[in-house]
Image (cartoon, rainbow, N blue to C red; front, side):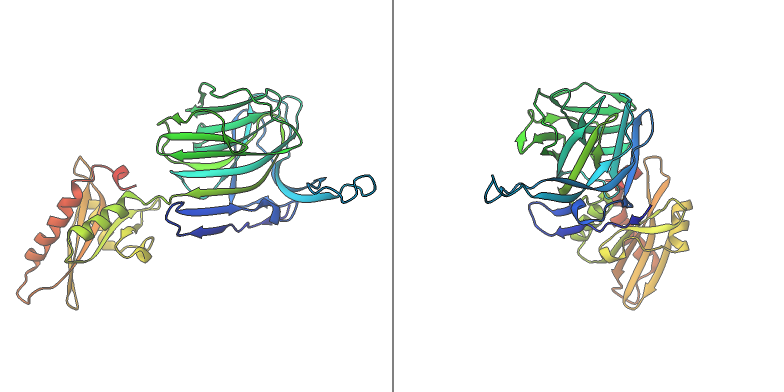
Length: 351
């Protein structure tokens, strides 16, 4: 099966929306599997088989002479889940790997084209894993719109109104999340009053179906506010609070035990590898001191509430005098790290 790496156009920098991702399914070849998505399954049964397919339908444009001119047909490429399984406990999902997202609006076009057991289409959002997520979905067979949450594999209560969902016609689903507020829209109109739920504050976004539903999804747009990690917010706050600093970094260990920069006053450094000094600081709280041309630097541990190191902080300052001792520099750096420590009690406080 041919696989194509789908490229998504991103427009960043507008102050209100923050950033935008457009997922143009219509622009990719039929038959391709999506390499920047992850197939997931809630419930039981076979996982979904998600592909880009060609879908032909009458054009929305009316013929010039209806009696004489036949209606033109239009072929477009859409996302479809091709594995039909009549199992009411089967919920195939396709999760977009970018994210997580916190405050966002996601909008997608969908068409329900059939199904014997169910005729449903939905969006999954603030997805953690296949046991924890939110869903907003439309049911043509059940004639309703519903929101629900799955927490630790347990499906919550359904919320939403009755609604006639026409099959073989394109509709839109949209979800707006702002903090704990969740607004669900169908064809551009609120489907229900704004909901408040604190089960999941962030997560990924994806597409949802049920049982043997034959559903197509069209072009999708995500407007979102980029999440700034708490570690980066902390660094930026400290740089403002201590204007004499010329550099501040936070290092943490990655999943392979290597030190990496997770926050810096120079954002271009984020993700770069650290040195053995930072690793040693995180392993046993060691303090390191160094001099550069007109500068001094100190590595100090940032601890959790139990006093165990969870990160290393490198503080860079100007060297003010030839007589400035190492102890004096370390003492100045400790003031900064002590201020940071007031806001950090666990690793979660840096995420």
